[in-house]
View 1 (cartoon, one colour):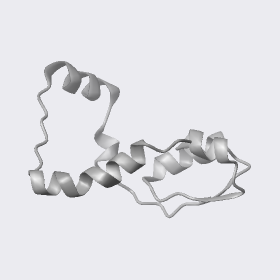
View 2 (spheres, rainbow, N blue to C red):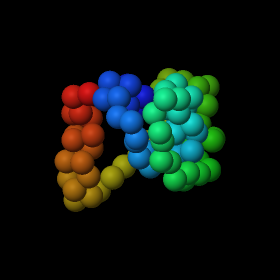
View 3 (tube, helix red, strand yellow):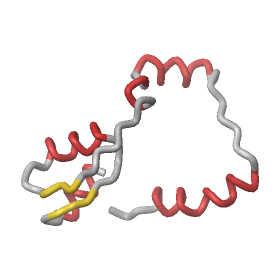
Length: 85
């Protein structure tokens, strides 16, 4: 997100995300006016680098999604990942 804002250099950006992410972008690019409704996610605060490493090493946390739901979600996720900027 920071790279997108940096590369597009809009004067004003609306960022609807978790509070600290919007804060990080604002700290990195103070000249950009940020409209950021703060959506506090209590689960984001529980994620740590140690927990991510443990999850990658043990593959202990598996998320399964029903194929019907996965198919509906695939297109928006692909569009989000395929952003060129």
